[in-house]
Image (tube, rainbow, N blue to C red; front, side):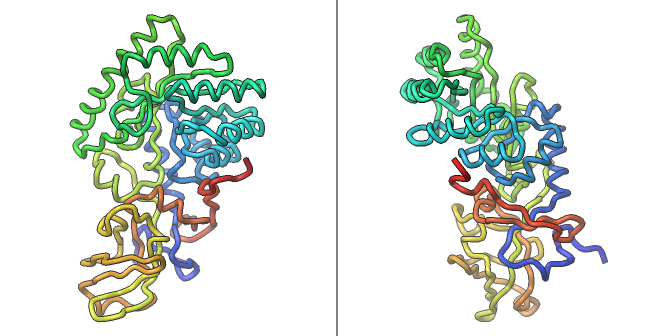
Length: 370
């Protein structure tokens, strides 16, 4: 009998709760991502989802040469894996500027850029990098409607762009435009929203052209808007979740052809009363930032409801209580895979439905060496 794709032939060797990565599916998702982009060189793949050097190496082997990350530790993890061009998608300040300089000194062959959205931080970067005789690579972060970070597209943004180019120890590479708030399920509607949100960006690009300053690179979007931005050849795309995929985006983005490649493995540890089972999957095992009904979708359990979670336990109401036994292994797809990965020090790696390796989730650390 053919086993379901997720079921491990050697599941008795897997402790629980654990995160299981299906290597063949990761490879397939990388190939699909490149196919959508049209060229691996168009991708600034975001690694905050996977946080693993081995996945970065798989991307490099597939031709992806540029990466986006969320933290200095993730940037160092990527550099350790062999990445040569990185954007840290945060405006770094305070001690993080010195950490960024230390990272640049440790990996001088790697271009490591960060985001700037105001003159104060630009000036701080310029002064700090001047002390070390270095250039700070930056992207101007634009707020195109998400209202989380970035400079608004108003009358003062051109002056900020000119200021970045005037500072002697800054090297402004381009524009970063993250429109993660655009998540409408219907692709045509979402595409229209993306294009409408880019009208003012285009006007800004026209204003830049009139100044005679260099034409900026444009790095835009994340996973939800990837398939819309990919239609415009001048834009570099930065999807990330699609490498592992999850239940949330799988339901919300029906035009995206990715497959689940990360699953939480848990065991039934108790049947405390009729109709209830308890698993060893508390909120330390799967991302718990969403309501209880949007945390995990079990692949081998039907007619159930996750009632509650504590740190190490999950209580589930099941309809067919008699058919579930203590010790049964359940496999579930996280609703949000990115913070779920961040809960694990290591993952099991599966090939041909067998655990063949473990990988360290190195990028989950706040600090690796710098």
